[in-house]
Amino acid sequence: MPSGGPSVIVNSLSSQRLVVFLLFTAQGATWFVLDCDDDKPWICWIAMSKPPRRIKPPTRGRKGEKKRKKQNLPMIHPNEGIDFGGLKEKFAEQRRTLILDESNDRDKSQLLEPSSLFLEKTQNLRLKATENITDAILLNDPIFKIGLGSEEVRTERERVLKGEIPSHFKGLPKELAEQRKILAQQQRKYSTNLLAKATQQHKQSREDQPNASPGPSPERERGEQLVPEVDILAEVMVDDRHEKNQWLILPDLRTQLSAEPEPVEFMIRVLCGEYEFNRKSTKTLIQHVASPFSVCKSMNHNSFGKFICSSFLADFSNPEENVWGRLFEELGPNKANQHQLMEIQELLDASHNKIELRCRLVGLLYYFAPEHFTAWWDHPAVPVDVRTKMEADFNHFELQNFSHAAIDHARMLVCAFAIENPKEVATRYTYARHQSGAAHESKTEKWLKKGCPDVDYITEAEIKKGKRGRTYGGKRVHRKVTPDILLSTPVKLTTNGQSIHWIDAKKQFIDPSFSPDDRISQFCDQIKKYVDAYGPGLVVWGKNFSDEWNDATKDIVLHIKI
Image 1 (cartoon, helix red, strand yellow):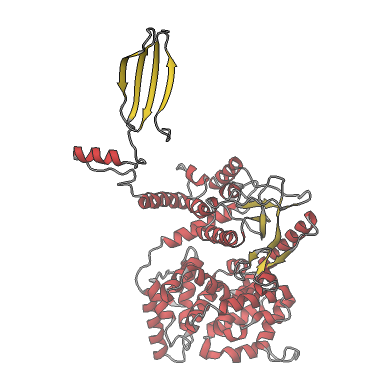
Image 2 (tube, rainbow, N blue to C red; image 1 turned 180 degrees about the horizontal axis):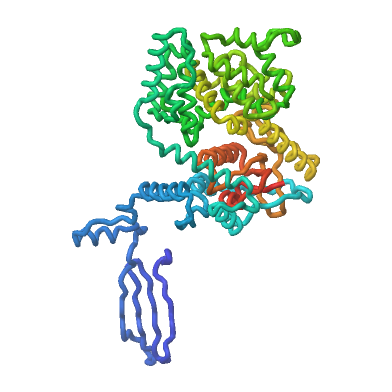
């Protein structure tokens, strides 16, 4: 309504003698119909409309609430009575059931789509506002590949579910198998405290026959699987007297770890339950205590032999010194029994070309004499880059302030795991994986320089050391938020592409549907930290990946392969 008082609108009707006036006032609108055929016009009809429905700004739902109150009807909200948390858990349970079912009798189309965890973790990234950077540097003809399309990804997953070999994602069957093991481990029910009873029997037997040299536990020889409660196992493991009776516990630990579907998940549950760690801290602890096993797969025959001998010999240059004699003096009957000493001797005499034998040997020696594996990365046979990486990891590990009991507990579990599953431990914990990742990071750096030789950036190592100060390129530098490359000036791959402030290289495969939840969650949390600190970025994969990553992080994080 005009604010300058009444206003008049004149409209002509079909008849020439009638004129219509429309007068707007604060009280409403009034129609005047005038007969202008005579000398003196006169009003022949007046009609006044109702005032506006609402003079004040409208309030949503006010009328509906008043109406319901008059009718004595309850107010119904759209989401009232809907348990979204229950629906989410039900959906997740259906998904877990389908993953654990290895048959082809059920409809598993739900597994062909990304998991709800993947969508949830990437939601915060999708909601972030994008930046419009006009001064981003356009890379000169960058060569890269995009991810596999959604239809092709669905086909790959369908092949794996049918037991067929995928065409593009070679690591997809392994991801699904690992997730099945983890889910089976999480659903595993622990029975009575058989381990506590078995350990007590061993102690009683040792007291009755102090000179006896028992072999494997009776339960192990009969092939019976001990399935203790987690808290009972932890209670036995951290007993103050266990250092004098390690040989009593090792056979039962070996039996326990060999019976678990996913031993690493079992160890995480044990340590979390006993020391109230979170999963991230527990993984850091296990990763540290398992680091000596990285030499098993990465070293050649001569280097591994020198590593073992020099760890127990004061002067390795003296060839006349007997390795077995020194080991026997170090271990002796107070730490290991005769059966275990014979097992160590057989592994020393065997060929070190077999990775499984190496891993079992390190497991036994590390179990009974952990002091010889302190700072193992200082050995001359360990590459310099691995030594640097391990020193940085050790500094991070010390900041966690783990107790000696927790470290010792984790070490004994990992050693038992290595003795029973040597191939898996040697593959899971190897510094060759770090070397492969470092090579991919170097390749990514060369790719960037080729596209823009004059680009200025700092690397992960420089961020950690704080060489460029607290700010770089107008951004505050966080020493704990370390992508592989942090750019001073943002770049872009295409003319209309998104700006890129940081680059992170990933020489691994993570599938939005089949990969374990921890792996998806950890990676999503990692790139979210980069985005929060530095803005949009780029992930350079070293293996084939699903373009679902680009769909989920559009305009925030770009994913390519070089």
